[in-house]
Image (cartoon, rainbow, N blue to C red):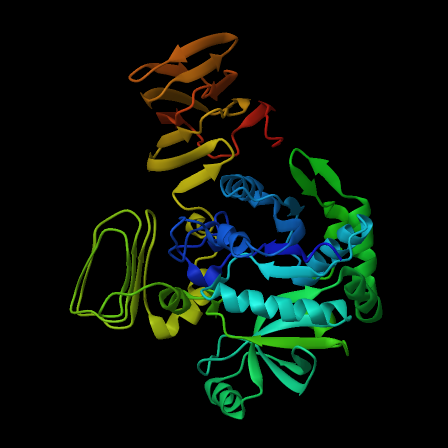
Length: 470
């Protein structure tokens, strides 16, 4: 076979245990959580670490609400991938089965390399060596997963109990749920348990054969979903009516725990799923006191802390094993041995906007930062990327006043075109049809002052949009 791997990257999670760094509108895989020379996000790092491997078709499967984030980051890192949009979350089994069906439809049955977009790997040589072994087993018809050699008794990961040795790995005897501390230590002592990484190497045809045996209904819905797939700009859209009928189930539960063909290749590659703040601290370089620091931070007499400042000065004195996460709109202070419980804080905050958006919100044309909000007014700092334009739109309940801070703005208001430069301004009345674009090679920065009885983002009637939004 000419192609070594067909890559399938799953990018549908929201990373709730990393709140407030990770939000549902801007989750962890689109952030640079682990420092690297290229400044790449977790998604970009996932693709970049495959450099040097022989690759075929790449598929990036993500939530439709993140499509422009995904496309922008792929473009910035020269990643060539089909971006497949899920209309709703359905866990990993439907995503991988759909990817396999699409490959078979294209006549491609080389092994899939299935990875999560939000994992960290520090030893890429060992990672590549394990993939070569896994590929050999996959070509023989095995469903192969990479098992991480455990370095401590971890309660946060599932485990794989392995049995007899095979050509390049071991047969899987059992997939085990996340254990308590005592059980995790027992697994470590016994020596035949590996952390379940969620990385798979499987030929598409083999996966579909096993799906027909163990999750036939899911496979049928996936086939109907693929038939209804449509192209939208640079994206592949899955039909919501069919995809929503797919069972929400992991690949482990749907197939891997049942198949007789499961194999595991052990690997020690500095892997982490960056699943909580403690894992985030361990994945980054620390100072002489064990502290991982990012942003405008001053630390004194503190040890083994994770301190992240996005916006303001953060000073820490006399703390140990503590996470301090400062963002523009929320601050979390937590003991690092309690960070698995951040999801419980998230549950208690249900309904608050801070769970969804950060104060700076990204759009396909750029971003805006809501710097002030009060009764009947809101102030935003808006950045429009070079060559980008906002939709032709109008608002029923608010007027807007725009002041150009830097750059050149092309503004259209009720049939009249205006060219605005730094310090120029323009008033947009209620119900006026208007559009803003940046036709230069430099970013455009404006300040927008909104006034009116209702200032919600849903008071936007889009009349024309180059990005295909409703």
